[in-house]
Image (cartoon, rainbow, N blue to C red):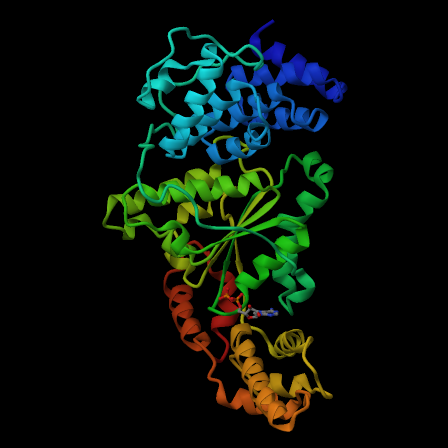
Length: 465
Ligand code: ADP
């Protein structure tokens, strides 16, 4: 029986006895030993559900993470055990490898020394050399971790480059994980956009069997584009809430770093953060700055960032981004490198249009719903706010509320907001750049639309703005 046939038989056996812990652990160990890292990771996760906090399984999972360069994930897996006194020293060595991968030499060194002082047999010569620490004389595999424990001499990154690991600034992601309280009910209008997101993102997670039957899996990306302020961020946050997924909102400042190589590391750390919190909606705002056409770039290192972004979207294997939904927003989709539009990446650009009068009324209703109100005619306000996008309407409501607050303070009682208040505020707010945006879009649609990428915009740019 060939290796893979053996593995296949094991997979089949585990599928038939999903609760057989030793079998699943054995399968996971085999997968890890043969380098099927994402599958090993999934198998260890499943085993961990059966035996939470089992040190051997945790070690296997952490190893799978480290070998995928998901150092943060490895640490997250190890942390609950490391917090307990007398934890198995081999876990300390794994933690040291993960910390080194993250560039945290000091903590890596501490963990490593602590581990080998308790059990010299877990020493790892390669790791010790990289920590500039003396290796312990005897070198053996840890006894309880299922897989053979062969630390690579240098951390092989996901894409093969043994990048520098030590002390470069900006080796993490400053993006944070949020829990979104919004749902699609909080997004007015945009029915077509919501439907596109439902099919692409939500249904595969909500009905995985159906999608699996058609050979499709959850994950992938959608590029949201449209005029600024039309609600792209709001929509992404609502998609996360709708799904019960974590939400990571990534701005340019979270990624871009003046030091060469640091931006790529930040990007990787951000993807890792999302992978650790799956299901997760990973949202990139102003993505055109991170995914710009490589032909427009003069500097090689900026191209490198684009390549890194493409590699992260593709993942090391087909499971790497499972349950990670990448939403990206841009006002300038024509600057995004066409490579991002290949299948499995942002293959489906979705236009987030400026709201029509009915959508404007609905947005106003949502924006005013928790305020003291007299009887409101939102349609009347919608009629006089041509060219206003969601962000402009928010400005109108904020201004009206401020004025009302002042009046209420003078009167000594809460005076509810009324239609004339909104109408007056709307007169004093200038809509943002929809008209200019449409003019730019018209140029691209009419003169640079060879591939038909912007056909969806045709009816819009032909309208009167
Ligand atoms: P963009 O990301 O497209 O620049 P935002 O999502 O930041 O725009 O929109 C700005 C604000 O406008 C949001 O925080 C939200 O309060 C409001 N808004 C925009 N579109 C909608 C909508 N369809 N329904 C409800 N509120 C909206």
